[in-house]
Image 1 (cartoon, rainbow, N blue to C red):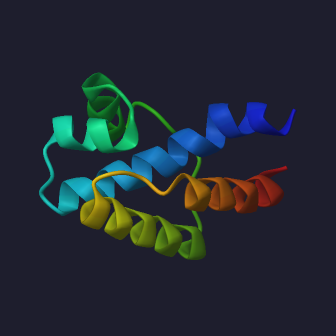
Image 2: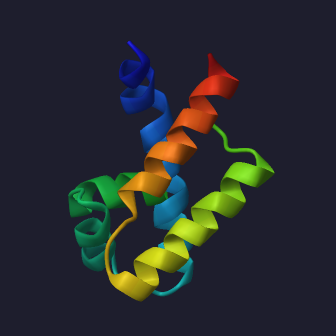
Amino acid sequence: MKCEISSRKILPAIRRALVMELVKASKKQNEIARMLKVTPAAVTQYVKGKRAKTSLTKDETKKVSKIAEYCLKNGNIDEDKICGLCDQMRERLV
């Protein structure tokens, strides 16, 4: 199934990149967890590099930056943009 690879490899990579962008913007881990709808412990693992081993391309990284900007402005994620990026990454990885 297409969403199985997404949930195991792609979504964690996107979340890790988002967490790192939001940390750079001086957001606290509890705030980041709330925005991304994950636990604070998951945020800590993303920061420490214990989750998500899939790398993003430069284009994918730019898209994550735009999603992070949206998060900072609106306080939550744009799920449609996450799904679009996930589809793009799945095409590259499968």
